[in-house]
Length: 192
Image (cartoon, rainbow, N blue to C red):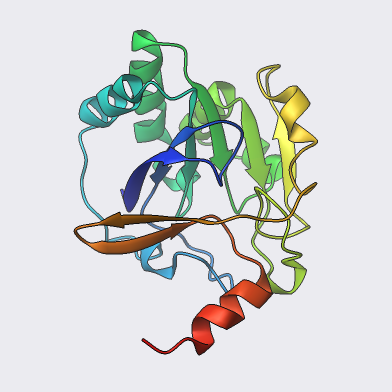
């Protein structure tokens, strides 16, 4: 696992619990979390403990991003099933893969994770297509409802200006969401 954050609103409808996986084989220019790329980085986390945290959070759902979540498909399936055994939890997954690529996979865990996912945000992040819209990084990414749970909200992806939120902790300040190119440029030019 790369990171977790409770009380997130910039990665989907409602107040959510967010999980970022460690490891990604893509090298998308402008990636918001390049530290999550190394396959040998991150922290090992017990899926039972993480599932309990998600269930106990009381949040409507969990948003899973990366790294690339489908590289951790089996562990994520276990986490989701354990959390859902405690309470009804909606699942949104961001992936750099397309739905068609995932459906063509011969990995059973990939298909199982798709079956547990309510809403899939698919497609590689393309920095030049970052149009500063909400709940997705770039305009090529699609919000694909895989169940009825978020079908109505899928149309809201890319419909409003993007937002980011900041969380302050012992490790420092964490920004969650995908900022517009203009906001990113302002951060790059700030002097601390």
